[in-house]
Length: 580
Image 1 (tube, one colour):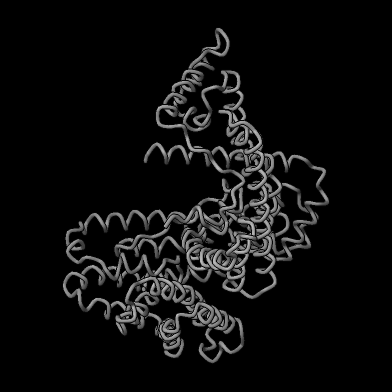
Image 2: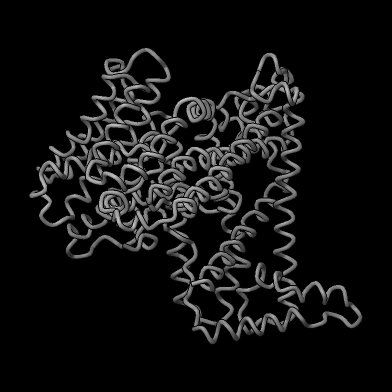
């Protein structure tokens, strides 16, 4: 299934035109290379040697059409280099101001006695411990889950080869024991009942019934009734809530993908057993990322034992070690960073915001989003490594937000597992329902897609948390997607009314899109401070930025950001096409 063209967030302002063909591409590359190797002025040998570097062509001007003149090539090259340098410099300089602001307003945070950590004695500095999710999971991985991941990795390879028929029961039993140890007996029983309840509901083949039950189950996670299933231990309650939320999404995937199978009714209890195994798949059970039941069935349930026996165990262990070392390095980087940049604590001290420099405010907002991405590279990275060792095809880890300037790209590339879930089970079914209902095609296509996107974000709001902060965050995300879709519709109309010249797409990429997406980029960055920080901090930041709006250099550096992001997307697109 092609997901990209049917996604709830794929409301691109840009719809790239297909290339004229391989010969045209090669012709354009030869022409650009010729332009870059031309002497700008006689005697400027240094400039000529710089432009002769193939890497400059590949990184900055590989998308230029044949008709572009030499002077324009130089202009594009210098503009994109300046944008990259400007954006990188702005990030570094604002980071320096965040450090200065923390030293001035959060001096007590640097006390290693008041804010101790593993590295406090070595660095003689305290740590910012205000991110509950990172503190909880970093402890969980080291003290609790690391042992279970190691046991599972060892048993998965040995038992599957020696006793393949018994492995499904051993795997589920191992997960059951882990949850019993982490959450207690009663929460584990209720987690086990979830796929059973959904399997029973699935017999009615009613999507409405399925979603009503899901909303009620998610509501129970936010109600005092949860205390009936969990002990007063905060860690056990946290384990239960996180796992239950993931399980509800998995159960939806299980039901929808089961309905797509012909003759699933005849499988009976075997189908239920597979559903329980899917929900209790140990590597992904607690922290995600989300994979569909269809993918799990293909890679794990229907895994060929003979193919597994032929795999090189030493090579798999080496790859696992390399990936875990990479994830460990990111975790170490996060820990060290939290000893010098107290951006989350700074965002929470709203009374100091009006005294901060504009650079410090921008740096704080930037690092809230950047830290969130780094955090989930670790939280998703560890289980991903174990699942890939088990033979599971996993979605890519979250991408760096420093070159994601549009809402649609951010939603597609940050959490690809959640994105596929929204597309497969909410966006496309909603779109199909509207199209089947609107037989006369009265509703415009873009409006149908907006309704499907709206339903996707309703689920995002309900699934993450029924709180006002998450509601505002989800609503602003939908607003950003809507603005992008309107911009995409306007661009299509403009394209219809203008001649399809060779320079039209280049002009859009170079001159128009980086400029018109600056307000959306600013809105996206501020919106992330709601989800990664708090509503109070986001409102405080917005007030300071509005009060200091006369300082135009913020917009200038945002333009550098969007320009760099567009150039990176073009380079990535052409690189993927070249490698294909």
